[in-house]
Image 1 (tube, rainbow, N blue to C red):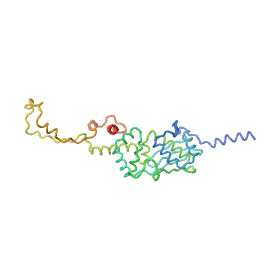
Image 2: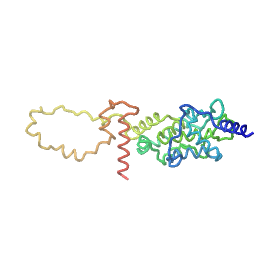
Image 3: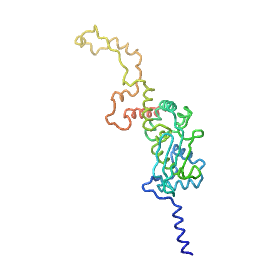
Image 4: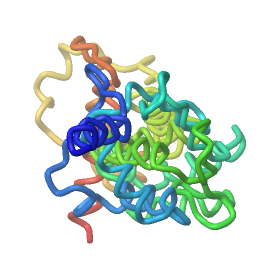
Length: 288
């Protein structure tokens, strides 16, 4: 009887464990969910709302063990394949309502009015005040009441389940190091966001793409030859007084950067635009 008992228990324990995944995606934060930046923590809270405590624990165990075979972020949806005890991975989904084109236009216009947003995003930061830009369009960047998340999984368990939790924890870890994923989740890829943001800032700060205002051509007709003016070259003329009283020319932002033209280095984002955003951010902070 005792031998039969010992032969059953290991088999039962083995059945309770999920099937292991080769080269699965593992949660690697040593602090777990503690110390997440505000935007990643807010995402986790939104997904965890209503989830049972045991599902949270099991979801983290799945994430740590690499039970998530893959996941992908697209406008309005995160899809993940999470291996449980079944033969095939369960398909877990976290969905939100993406912003429309018109809503994104309003958000980007508002973000472009302050240099801090482009500068902070380029350094991998998301200022908390960014939610005010979305609020003016009647939306949110992070899931919130009335604009929250929905979860689905074909495991048949109560939602949100441990498979959804595992996917959410991995996504939170990615959001920490690559916050533009949040914008892709809301419907606009990070690279496109930064490009549109810089274009809008250029329009708002100058409205033109040339480096300097075009000067009117001087009328040189009737002036004496240059060689007849050599003796008086260093003497100020009456025009000096007129120059002091003349109105100041319109300021053209980042004139030197624009005169230099496109960077020959290439890269993911335009170098001139990146430097312009950084200069604006430094100027804004020094003025505070």
